[in-house]
Length: 529
Image (cartoon, rainbow, N blue to C red):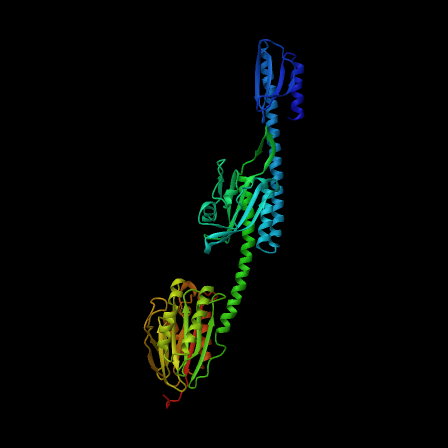
C-alpha cells in the first residue's frame, strides 16, 4: 500500500475516535490496523483493493460518519488501483523494452553463429531468458524421413531435477503428437496443458518433458502462401515465481506473452537458417551450373559437308535443355537436342543422366531409333518417379552425305529451309515422349538436302517466349524468321540472328524457359550422296 494511503487511513482513525480501520489480505487476515472502534453496536464499510480490502468499523449511531468514511475509503481504494495499474504498466513497459533490447541483440548473435547447432543454442537461451521458462527445445525438420532431429535441448538449472526418467530421443517422429500439429500449420501455435499426474505423449517425445504446459511454434522461411517449414521451437513450463503458499511452489502459466516471445525467436531462427540454406543452395546451383556447362559441347564437330552452330541459355542457374554431338557406332554423328520438363536443379540432374546414358548407348548402336528406344526404356522409372518427361530429337549426319536420318521423341517440329525455293518445310514431330510408356518404338525419316539447305532444331523456349501483352513468339514467326535468316548466311550467324530476334521480341521481359537452337547447314557438293 502506498504511504499516502496509509497516512489517510491513519488520519480517519485519529479524527473519528470511535472508528477503527484495518487492511486485510485476500485470505481475510488483518495486515494493518488503526484505531479501536469500541462501539458495541457497530456497522462496517468495506472497499476492495487490488490485493485484499480495507474495512472501517463505526458506531451505527453515527450514520453521518459512515457516509464520510465510506467516501474516504473509496478514495483510498481508487488511488491504490490507479497506483497498481501504473506500476503494472511501468513493469510491462520495462519488460517490453528489455525484450526489444534482447531481440535487437539476439539477431546479430544468431547470424554470427558458427553452425546450425550453435545458432539454435543461442536462440534457445535467448528464448528461455525472455519467456522465463524451464526448458526450450529446437528441432530441425527432416520431411523426407518424416521425423525431426533434436538440435538443442536447453534446460534451466533449477528444473533439471524435475525431468522425466526417460530422456528426450535424438530423433523423434513428426507424423504424430505435438510435432505433427505444430508442423501442420506454418502459421499456427500449439499450447498443451498437462493433467497431473499424467504426462503428455510417449516417453522420449518432446511433450513428455512437460510437467505443466508446453508451447510449440513452427520455424519457417520464405514469404507467400507456402513458406518452407524448417523446424519447431518448443517452450516448456513457466519458471517458479519465487513465492510460496504453505509448502507448495507457485508457478506461472504460459500465455500470450510467451507465445509472442516464441514467435519472435522462431522468426529470427527462420530468417537465419533460411538465409543459410538459400546461400548453400545457391552454391550448389553454381556448382550444378558449372557441371552442366562443362558437359555441353565447347565447339561443333567437324562433319564434312555440313556447318553446325548452336546456342543454349537457361532461364535459371540450371536448365532442363540439352544439345550434343554424339559419335555413333557406325561412324556417323548424331546431332541431338532434348528438353526435360521443368527448369530447376532436378531437371538439370535428369538431363545430365540422359546425356551420360545416351552417349553410352551411342557407342554400341548405329541407328538413332535404337538409341532413343533404349534411352526411353532405361529412363522410364526415373522420369515417372520424379514426375517428369523428356522430349528429344536427333539428326544423324555422315561426312559429305546429303541424306540425313531424323528421329523425334515428341520434340518440337523440325524446320528445313530449302535454298532452291526460299521456303521452309515443317516436319511434324512424331514418336512418343520419353517417360510416357516404358518401351516405345521409334522410326526415322530420311531427309535429302541440297547445298545451302538448313535445318533448325529448337526447344519450346523459343516459340513460347513471351513479349508485350503476353503474346508468344510462336511457330509462324519463327518460320518466317528462319526463312529470312537462312539465305547466304553461315550457321552461326543464323543462330545469332534468332537469339537477337527473341531478345528484341521480349522487350526486357523475364525469360521463363530455357532456350536452345541448333542450325545445321548443308555445304556438300551436289555430286555427293
